[in-house]
Image (cartoon, rainbow over all chains, first blue to last red; front, side, top):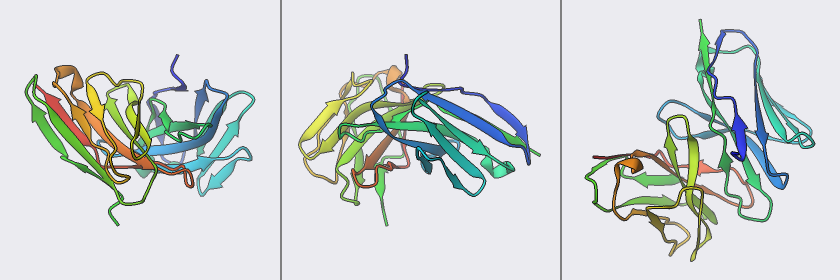
Length: 111
Length: 112
């Protein structure tokens, strides 16, 4: 079983839609959580960190449920430019701080 | 403002050839790592380092060697290239303080 699981999609939504992605992780010792965005043939870039209290950045909201070991990302009012692959990332406690990636969820926003 | 620099961006190798993918960061990060990305597989960890002189294996280490003689550099060596190593390779660095990983632009490697 992969440590970080994501639905690969693709999620195909119209502009203006709200879309949500979930991600589950298997290691309860996981310490830090992130969503990264990857555009086609480019390197991943940090979209936002995920905190236990939940956090929002404009149209993006991330939430963490430690008890159920899942992370979510909500995108409101989708734009064409949101089309990308969204990667769920987890780092373990214990000091290595080396990220473990999910396979990514593909989002396609169409006119 | 270089961040993480990977070279080369593209490479074609013949089966059996060896080569080194270079990775350098100028952010004084302790942690550096190499990933490969294949279609449908996401990023898989090859090797990583938590500081100069310290390296460890990730999920898919076979066929690759690394060393970390300085904080800045973390080269990845392919000892004898195989077609199964055709992939996109990303180097990343991070620190205990920020935990965000910064990536190089990637190396697209084709082994024929």
